Image (cartoon, rainbow, N blue to C red; front, top):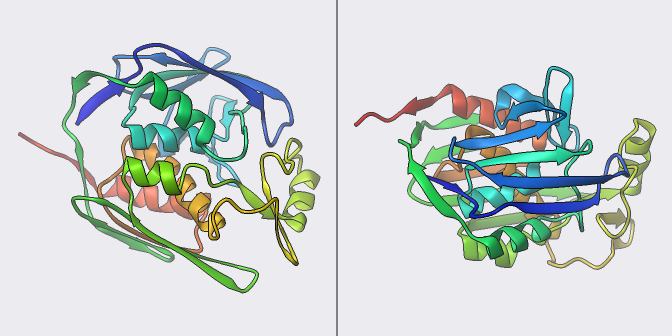
Length: 264
C-alpha cells in the first residue's frame, strides 16, 4: 500500500455547523504515515481509540482536546488515497462549507498527491453485526439502505473516484426540523442553516435535492470517512441498513478486531 501525501499545504476556512464559529484547517504534507490531527499542540491520531462522540458527527479527542466533524474531510482523503498528512485545526471543528465534501474534494484533487513510501496493507476479515456486513473483496462495493419518514432509499455502487465525484461527494447533511431543535437544545447545530444542510419537511426537502436519493448518498459519504479510522478503505463489500456514525464506528471496531498484518 502506498503512503500518499500532498505536494504542498492546503488551507480551508469556514463556519462550523455545530459551534457556529469560524474555524480554519491547514493540511500539511508528512512522510510519517497516518492522518494526524493537531489542535492546541495536541496530536490526535485518526483511530477508533480516539473517537469521543458519534452523535451527528465524529469527534476525535485526546486528553481533553477535541476536533469535531472530521468525517467529510476524511472521506475525500480516503478516496484520493491520502494517508500521510498532518491536519492543523484552528477552532473546535472542521468547516462545514455546504454540508458535503465538495470543497475539500475540489481543493485536494487540484493539488494532487505524491507517494512518500510503501507499507504492507492490513488484511481484513469478514465481520457482521446488527445493521452491517463486510466481506473482503477486490473492489470497494457499498450497499446502503435507509428509511426516512416511511420512504426507503438505497444506494448500491462499486465506488471508484469517478463514481465518488459524480454521485457521492456533493451529497449534503440533512435532518428534520425536530432534529435541529433537539440539537440546538443540547448545544449543537448552532451554525446549521439552509446553506449547509438539507431540511426534511412534511412536503419534501428544502432546498431542492441535488440527487433524488441525496440523503442515502450522504450516508455513504459519511461511511467512507468513518472507515478511514482504520487507516485506509478496506476493499470488499459493505452492506449497511439504517446506519449512522455510531453504527459505522461499531463496524470499524469490529474490523480492527479482525485485522491482521500481512507478512512477506
